[in-house]
Image (tube, rainbow, N blue to C red):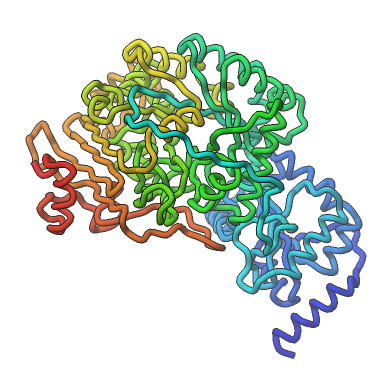
Length: 624
């Protein structure tokens, strides 16, 4: 009997529902052994990942599902069950093996229930807290019956398998009356995320090792919000909620959702959805993501009441298809949809975009739409960065002993490294790059977006945020702090398309003390020599056609070298379909991260002649 015949026979056996009764669930470990058993018996696999020592949800799954006789009987006859769980006694080699298995199933840093086929390929994902054993078993049967041979890498609810999502209702979009004048002023947009776990990539999957339930209370939220109001009177901010946080029944989350109504009423704050904690498109199918957005936004409206409707979404990274969906069906035209210069750090990467707002192209969320409103590749979505970072750090990839590529206005990458005093110095150094008089006069406006997670305020020095806001307000008193939706809509009214984008920035490295001197001020101070390069000057230029950057050792009067040149008239495409990819970048002629041999900074004269002409047409001083 060949393999195909054997598997068909096994499938008929499963469909007949022939059970062998067992006293307890049989786990076959390690994963490689279970995979061989599945291949031999032609049975699909149930792969449970998590941390049964520290994860309440994992413990609950073992108790309420894996210990039930009905499931034990079904699994004995129809499944090969295995665990890929965290164990503090694992060797380095064992940890790496388990990490590779989790990575192949698209479940890093999370607990999950994965269904795989007899070849060990992922075909579905289920919740660790099913509605019932009967429903759980039926979902497994449906997943197996509908599984494609190549597997399903991204998450989708069983009911959404191979379905197109159609919203229960759509919201009408109205085109604003556009201003003939460009946007002016200085703006801060502060976003605060409310979640249940550190990572919540899908509706069924949370990070079981570091649950944050106790870090989300009304006391913490009130203390933080009052501190913002005192440091920056009249400030309006954005609160972004995950699917888990919107649905959790714990008393602290019930009370926190009630408090949000008061923040909307008393402060004019905005409430919105935070899908997938920065990586919705990486982990979920397109149709599932649309469903998450629609139903999540409806939950936010119910939470606030009175016909409330969000004006933006906080997303980390958002595919251009989802942007188009929001614009056409949800009447949302503002999204925090990129993390500027993110590369080899965090859960998903996206280097190549414009640092200030722009309308995204239908080709790629990092590409500025080339056509006018209503034409060609134009998506009516204002794509906004989430973190203002130091350009010196932004040119670097990931993290290392000499740098962190995300250093900027965020407290984790500034104040926690450098302490209250020196951390504020770095935050203000970055703020000055955007708010100084010469830059604002040329660009028309300055913009500092920043995202904090509410859980930070449970363990971090609570003065980091108000100290920065107070310092910005004192130095630049005309600064306005608007919610994300409010600022994005304001930008939209002054820009009918991307034609007005013409930005210039100049930065020299922050003069921070050595590690020895810094630790006299803050004992845990960490000096980052590749970030605090006082000998270097970086110049950035952005417009709808391209972005361009140079780097120079100005102290030695060295040559000004091209560090980045990314054209926006190229046919870029995002990872799509069933593809799981962390890098959603657009890398063109030369990229600041130097991840390719061609990316080493080079003289302007070494660029193709036609590209030199394009750059000089916009910026005549570029080759000086």
